[in-house]
Image (tube, rainbow, N blue to C red):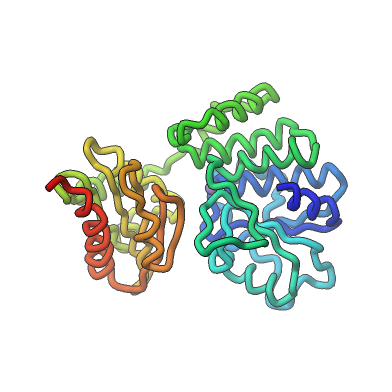
Length: 329
Ligand SMILES: [Mn+2]
């Protein structure tokens, strides 16, 4: 983190970005870092590889976030000195932004909290024990950059942490997210307001689709595995967006006795997004990696280029095989 702080301090013009399908943690982390660095006099541009989902817009009233401002023509003569990517360390998840950074040879650092997929990398600053990237940005600002955290920055950091911990439910028994959140509250952050935006602003179509989806859930492996396939036609019928279905897999994991949950969401012709979750007895990121994806030991995902039915078959086979080894003789 010292290395990252040095590089940031040395840069006058920074570019911040995050992964495709940007989430509350990535967006909150980008905005918090950008606000703090802008206040210290730096030029900071924020670009997203996909549009910002509606429910995170409240964090960005002055519209700092841009989507696709940089086309193939490049940076228009104003090359950033440094790019900092939050909440991922995978080039593949940056889409066209990754290609542009490579093409223009922009020095790029990844600031992340996901376990590294392929050994050590000098361009990745990652702490997989952190609840969220927001927690890491907080640590960077307070302990390494000595930059003040005002109420606005605090809101973004609080939203990051609340989003990735699902309102402080998944905290890996570390007191840190609570301690950081307490400090942010003391800076004037309105936790109720953030909760309302992040978790209590669901469109009714999402609820109806969830009802339909829950009716289709299958329970296997003697009650330890819950899974469901979500056809693209259902998503269209109910008019929900990608972001709306993000928590569906967690509902499956909340069933009594379930150890592993899988949601397979059809997103296009022969394109299925797989989300895997585990309560902690089984590590499922290796299954995601077998399909070219990644994530945390207990929360991971991948994209499979097959039909929905074939994807379900292949994923179930892998999950059942890792769970079989644990079955009492
Ligand atoms: Mn995150």
